[in-house]
Length: 138
Image 1 (cartoon, one colour):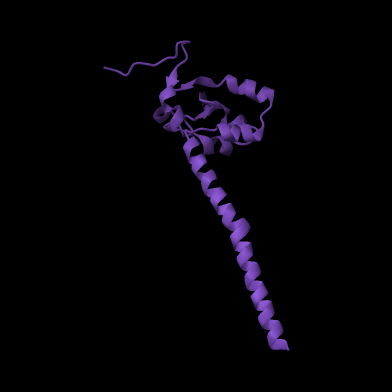
Image 2 (cartoon, rainbow, N blue to C red):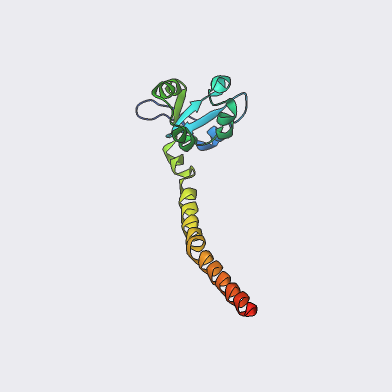
């Protein structure tokens, strides 16, 4: 028996993350932006930022990259014409958000070391070297 197609109550087709991840070639390039699945295959050559930008995001979540660029209203309208469905609700938590939290935590810990301890140690070493140098000069 074949797999049944899942649709939202509003009739929007749901795609599983694994399905989207497979669409990462020149023949078929899909990306996810705000949990909507876009087929950008035919748009690769027309993309003002170059096709490489879309290819880097192929098969994955491009929300952060899309928003960081600050696309115009016209670009957003054009993108809406490429929507083919939505990411299945069960897969929405699987895309990169937990990793960002971990990275943020590590950065905070690293910044404490780099902002306080390392400069303090450097200042102490410079002070000791200065005192040794001036003592030997006398």
